[in-house]
Amino acid sequence: IKMKFDNILSEINGFGKFQIKLVLIQILSRITLPCHFLLNNFMAAVPSHHCDISALDNGDLFGNLTLDQKLAVGIPAEQDGTLSSCQMFSVPQYQYLSGSNSSEDAFTVQCWNGWVYDNSTFKSTVATEWDLVCSRKGMNKATATVFFIGVMVGAPLFGFLSDKFGRRPLLLVSYLSSTIFAVLSAFSPSYVMFVIMRFFTGISLKTIICADISADVEWFGVEHRTFSGIIISLDWTVGTWTLVGIAYCVNEWRMLILAVTSPLILAIIAWRWLPESARWLTANGNAEAAHYYIKKCAEMNNRTEYKNYTVVDLFRTPKIRKLTVFSGIVWYGVAFTYFGISLNITGFGLNPYLTQFIFASIEMPMMIGVYLFLEKIGRKPGETGTLLLTGLCLFINMFVAQGNLRFSFLARLGVSISPLIMLLEDVWHLLPAVTYCAVAIGSGLVASLLPETLNTQLPEFIEDIEKPR
Image 1 (cartoon, helix red, strand yellow):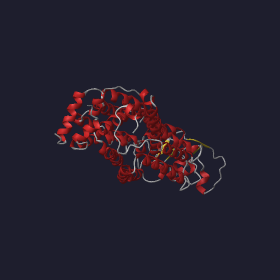
Image 2 (tube, helix red, strand yellow):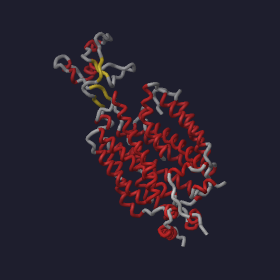
Image 3 (tube, helix red, strand yellow):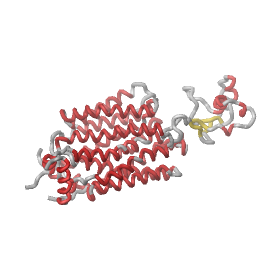
Image 4 (cartoon, helix red, strand yellow):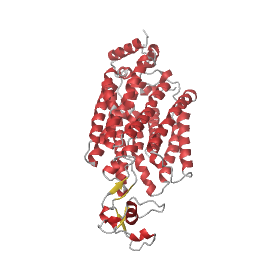
């Protein structure tokens, strides 16, 4: 008689010391994820800046002026009275010293001698290192986009490899490669090399998402699946807090990368105690190895037909095809909206460390609420309701405090495009908010078409999905 794996987990305790040890070991790697995914908020921050006007110093009158006077005669003011970030006068405008507003002969030009940055908050960032401001600000946003494109590429690649070779070996590969590429990016002498290294870092980190979470969830029983998912997701909040603390202490971008990557060193050491997914071993016909790990799980918890699938199979039958397409759209919408907000926290006009800390702190109590909601009401109304509510809040936000607040494979595609959406504000200042709002609402409507999974057994084969519930 063939026994479902979920029944086996119930027999050996689907949430015991074995599973707790597994979760605790993998915290080391999972807290690194938000550190890198949200790293651009600090690593690529753009501090206040203005043109370097030292070239205007002719050694005569200009050299005898105070710094404020030099800025007044060398840099034009914006409508709000602040100094222009990207323009300077071609020659000093001494008439401004006497309070004259005459603009005669006040020709402005692009910064021809670089920029001067305010380093009171950040000692150095990617933006200040390679002058990724003004006409080059798109290159600064692109650093996040390239990283998430790497994550997007890693989704199908490492998803396939983890299904073929197992979760455990791919995790070690991810830990090692993520560490190597992160270190190389920290020591990059050029912008091009830095972007390439961030791309490969994104690819490598994706395995932690594919293999790490799968290795955890596949060891939890049906009755503990929601709770385990919430516990695992709390690592993201802890990781975000960790990022804020490290970024506050380390304000030089190269050292910051090394600091947030350091937990992976401990993850590599702890890897030897990670078990392989017995569910994966069973599905791949390796019953002997699966029995070994199941026996270890039973001991620690005090409880004394093989098929290969490919990506093509996700579109082969009607129900799995519908599930694949709708889930992909929802993942895209969630990631697009979440990172669209998270990667633009500077738009709130507050201290970036405080803003990021508040973002993370809000998530912690919400996770508890989400757990209760999912357990009592279900996944589909939870996913649909939160996405629609997010879209509504973004819509309302467009009419409140304007100018002060900005708000899987397909998921990574949404993330990779998200940072560049903020460049649309040059076309219309509300266009980014409109875009995020539309995607959130559209994804919420699609989520309502997904099947409910509350208190249901996980399907082990595509045929299980096609059968009537």
